[in-house]
Image (cartoon, rainbow, N blue to C red):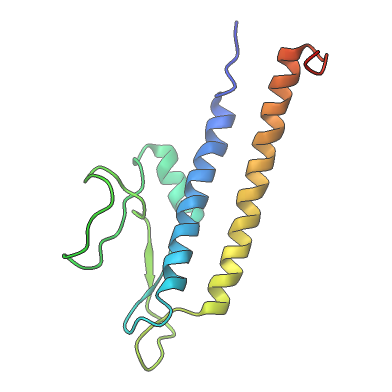
Length: 138
């Protein structure tokens, strides 16, 4: 029986990378809107989103904050379905983005993304070594 490198474990880590990418995009959006009056910071909780993706709640959805904005992808394309607005801590301009917090979250998320990527890299290197028969490609 042939075992595929895209087994259930690999798919779990692939989904994890998808969610981590969505988190990175959410954080980048917050940072880009740091000086936008009235902008509410958003978070994409990893566990909730990951569980939803595993349940098959589909791809994640992009958020359109203004009816005049162009939606990315089709109606079926979802990037930020589980995004939560953060209303607490607004300044005088009603903006809730805390740049230092966002930078910390981005660094943490980047480390988690890199860890999963390294794990998958090792997994594929193992498959490559098995295919080569331990000869190092000779």
